[in-house]
Length: 200
Image 1: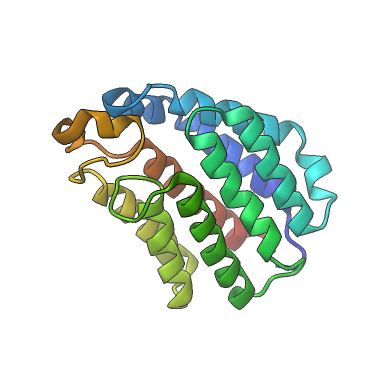
Image 2: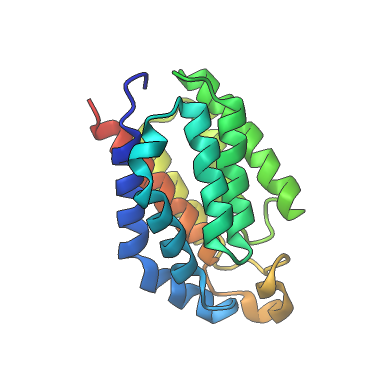
């Protein structure tokens, strides 16, 4: 990962969010504000606009800059949480991370998101995807397996009752719908691991 093509990674993530913006909006319309797709697209387009500048920085600084940009541009409940994920990753990761460092940094980032959102696994949030992904990293799973685990984890939020955020006001009516934040997190995980696999 020493020769990480961060600009390419940013472009891939922004493309994936843009391609799925309508899906994310539809998911959020069912149990939330209905603005998740638009908010995520706006945030990642803002990051894309500065991809070259971010990629010129050392990886820790780049991740912190991306996190700050996401907090400023995504908005809603997701902006601070997603931004916290990248900010915490940037704080913990090395400039040329190996798997052990990446796994440890991801674990710390997961903890930071949980603390920021005052939430835990099982409450129908992005944490329900982040935790299984961290477990998969700890277990040494392959990139394709991690992507599949993220997708499956988002599916697991469908029968859950929301306990955090706007969806929690719906009570039992939140059951039967995938959490939009979990879906967008899984989408990003798949895009990132597949792009990293494809980089020389």
